[in-house]
Image 1 (tube, one colour):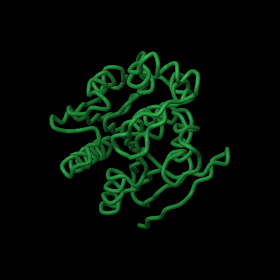
Image 2: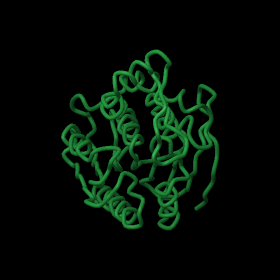
Image 3: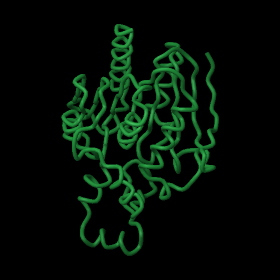
Length: 255
């Protein structure tokens, strides 16, 4: 079993940084949240978990994040989904469990819809499908919306960084082409949704609604009463690996 940090070149010439651990199936494929990267606590913890258990693992920095090429404001849900699908196709083999954190949960769902034969389970951590419309645009003042229309972007404070979060017209418009929560979501694989009830960024009602929209009958929502948005505490990480172990055991029983 080996670990490596490499670069994947996409068809459009963009380069995507990734970490990879060779190991057994099903593999774990991790997608970070908005303005995060594969060096975050959850990604690093999952890589260590896979190294210790002999399981395959891949995590990527999506376009405009971490060590990948591009500027954040030129990204968007559709492009980040393309990154995830390209990585699934070129960096993984066999069945996969995708884990998506916050924005990565939206990308996770869209990637699963594109590669249903490759995915045997999904785990959302404060998954945030449709957040550009429901959590950003709908919360803006009329002045802020006008500024985006006229200037192409606004900047908002970022609780996790000294740098502001750029909300661009492109991010919002691209998000509108990627919405999933307006009806049934045709994913029929086991799904586990973890969400902190103290999450001030993505309300836990989002996971409850997502569970309703998913076609799959094998969906469980785990609410953590004192959990925040990140769910990166030691107890949160232990809970996450226990959920992974459960999905892997479920897959073993089906084989």
